[in-house]
Length: 197
Image (cartoon, rainbow, N blue to C red; front, top):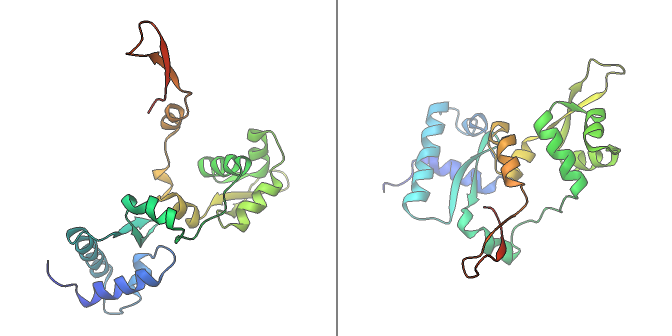
């Protein structure tokens, strides 16, 4: 494969220094002579370079921008090495609220609490402190309550480019079904528990 262009090399350097996905506009600001098309061409060249030469990293479109990430096939080894920065785990209550916001946004606290059946003030504060949600406006309803939506960090942590990449409700219904009982091939009439997959 041919060597990288100076613009591709510049993008590569910036990708390795960045801690978040960078938009085409941000990347274009690095070289005033480069158009958006030039930046996209340089990104494609860098992606092909990593793919062709079998690198352990790849350029990924994520959360409305681009970022260099370790390939998924190495994720378990990186996790074991503890070299990656670990995000504190979210409680079940926090995940429920985050899912409600992701699928219903913009959504107010009252609607979140109606769905969950419990007070969500502390959970919403935690999600805001972690940068996963933000106030996106005010409702036209009585008292003009705050409305919440997810942030680009939410997309980044889930490995999504935009909200359209979230699983559809039908996909979640299938994925969350309890395991089924199926006949065990080694036993006449006996049943064994198997996971649906």
